[in-house]
Image (cartoon, rainbow, N blue to C red; front, side, top):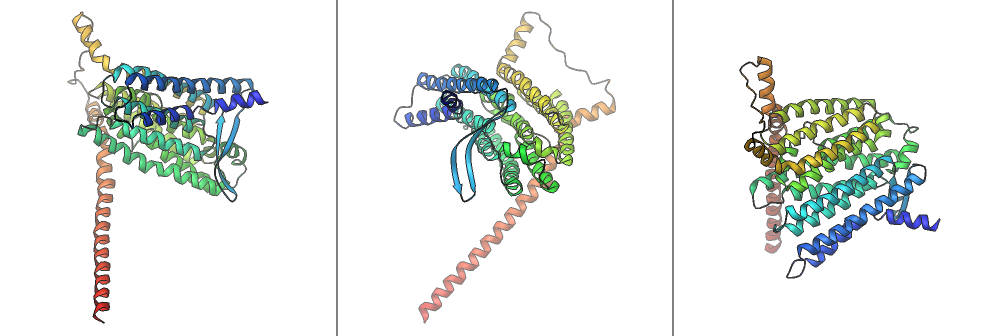
Length: 444
């Protein structure tokens, strides 16, 4: 029993290795001279190899146990009365496979970025953010409750924003990062409210408790509300309509982060959330229908927009949105294992394609110089009116962002400005009353 527990404890260190390495690099960076690139790379590779080793041990132990889910309880992070926030990890088919692939992709990204960002002023910053992201994604995937999933979800979100704005000396990346931040902050409310609602419904957000009790728990309205909240959060993270306009803008970040975040891992976390919420979705057929509708519409619209994109990265971004939409449909149809298989295959393919993007133009020019075939532009003279109409809609991204800007963003900003003016007037009136009271007191 002791060797087994020791090995499980080593497996549970998967989220901790990158976090400790990021802290160590941060401490080394406090001096007058920042650490050399080779030191940063060596420490990063060591931490990520340890993470992969922990996941390998956890996978072997899970397989040796008959592939039965393992709820590994470590210690209480916080306790108050009957409530306790436990650090617990959950090893099952979904978490083991996704976490193992994530550890491999992040390690490959560090090897790629070692040369890609050589002599870049933000070299150390990139590796620290990538290590924090690695810790967050491991906590998100391996965490045994929606509380821990929320913690990892937030870490992944903030590192995404900071890496989109990595080249902050230019306005484009900063604006794109703000767009990602606003979308994440808005949609993350769904995950927060959903976790709180789960506490009120089942008095727990642990996956094991969810699987055991949600089927016999009365409350179809609770399942509907929780399911809609989790769907709203998944839409934001996975760039589904109508909040998916941030993903093409996120390509402003370095190619390495685009590959691991928006090709391989981060953009698929919304699908992973829905896979984890499968017991809740089974009690809420209306949520399943909403997932199918949103995913299907997103898949079609993104596929058409990707066909008319002017650059390779944007085209890949819309292709990613389209495939993730199909994963939503699979989850909505009650096929979580198929969605998991689709997620893994798509993440590996898109990761490779994003890493190859900088070489795409060079390869096309080489084929042209060597007499190879070059794709000819499509002639539109023979297009039907319907084809031209669809083409125009695709060029305009189906005007989704324009509608949101006019009917959602602008009214909210106007309301915020009006409330701000009311607040300033109220504060001014209260200060005037206070000053008048002081003067009358002095007069007496």
